Length: 210
Image (cartoon, rainbow, N blue to C red; front, side, top):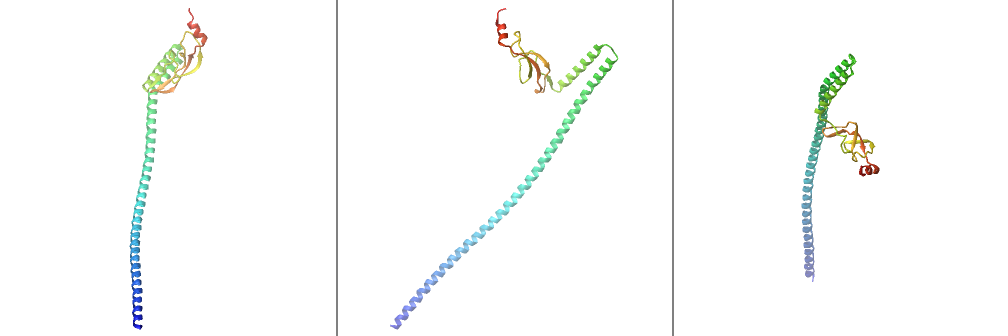
C-alpha cells in the first residue's frame, strides 16, 4: 500500500511539473510575441519620426520658398511702379514739348495785338493758336463729341435744359452749351446740351393740318 501511495504522489508531481512547464512555455511564447510587437511598434515609431522630420524639413523649404516669392513680388511691384512713373513723366514731358510752340504763337499773337489797335489781328492769332492746339490734341487721341442735331444720348450728353418745340423731333439736341470730349473712346466729359422734349400740345400742333 505504501508503494502504491508513493507512485501516486510521483504521478501527481509529474502532472504539476508538466502543467507548470506548459504554462511557462506559454508565457515565454506570449512574452516573445509581446517583444515582437514592441519591436514592430518601435520600428513604426522610428519610421514616423523620420517622416515627421522629413515633413518638417519640407515645410521649412516651402516656407523659405514662399518668403522668397513674396520678396520677389514686392520688388516686382516696386519696379513696375517706378517704371510706370517714369513712363508717365516722359509722356507729360513729351506733351509739354509739343505745347511749347502753341505758347510761343499765343505770346506772339498777344504782342502783335498790344502794338496794334486792330482787334482782327488778335482774333486771327487766337484762332490760329486754337486750331494748332486742337490739331495737337487730336493727334493725342482727343475727339469732340457730336451734340447739336444728334439724338440725346445720356452716355455722351448731359441735359442741363429742356425746350419744347414742335419743329424739332422729340429727344433731339437743339443746342450745345459746352463741348464734350472723349480720349481714345473714353469719355472725358459729356457735352452739356439743351434737349427738345415735346409736350402733348406740341405734338398736337405738329399733327394738325397747316
